[in-house]
Length: 116
Image (cartoon, rainbow, N blue to C red):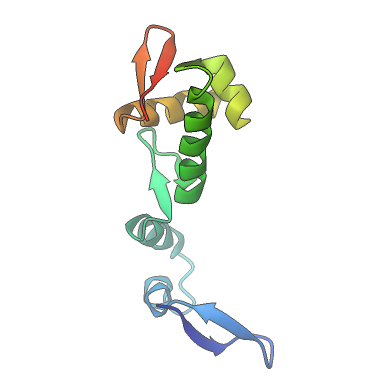
């Protein structure tokens, strides 16, 4: 639940989550790893198999685009996936492997069959 609290600028209201305040700690410069883990636990971030982090909403949007793509073709290759998502091969392959692991896609040779 979000609580209202006075922000740094006089008179401004900033939405702050009290749990996040506990995770960050006052003036703790080493808080970033704890913040990332907290965001993962909250379902806001997703760590895929190779350790890359993606926003959960971005992955949901990707699944939606794959469902739309599946209306015209039940398979997608790496090149078409790169074009659909606008990512480089460096990110496309780990994302496709993540989608395989969660059973949104299934690798069949050099293409992915779209299951969802």
